[in-house]
Length: 264
Image 1 (spheres, rainbow, N blue to C red):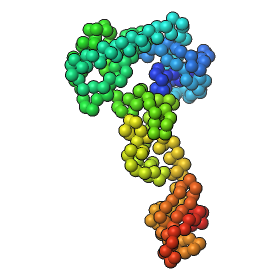
Image 2: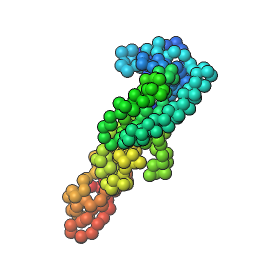
Image 3: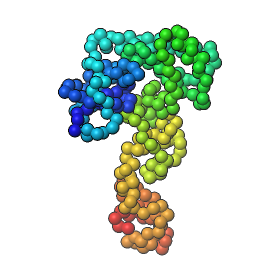
Image 4: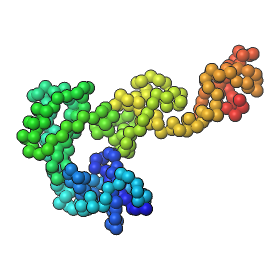
């Protein structure tokens, strides 16, 4: 077993794992890390995680250059400020070149060897001329990264239909698959406006309780199924999965009666 730490390079972004070696790192500590193509600054979000020696996806301790100093933190703040200026320049260039792109974010690596612009677009964009003009202005490697609507919401943030800050921009590091079947299993309205988030995709929170609903549904009959009840035979017309209550329309009495799932 080896001791590793988890590091994020952007707020609520994916976690990268590094061997901790003999060094004891603290939660929320900033580290200067060599990722191979660039030197960047990351924040420790997991400490003292034990992993198998042959587990993949873990970077060697040598990639961690040092714990960030006050000077490093000042440089990081300067990079962020200048990235905002670069954002404005890029937006102006996009308008001049009449590119149908929505610019989301600009960011420098810590060593300023790369300047990345994140954008969204409905289709493919030929941005080669834009890259050339930006490279001439900033004199560094320019990368344009097209992102989807879910990543756009993650970066920009906002308030969800529940009235709380978006899950993806507060604590969800990675997106999980969400399907319309989850909404069906939970008895939710299939109206897209009610089960979609700000990004226009199915809400991530549909996944949170899905396993519980699936487990509880196994002990209950399906809609339209004919069942035998203590009051006679009938057809299932409604289910309350969490309460384990089944509404049945009785054939003989032509009335609807509620029964506990265990009674059927």
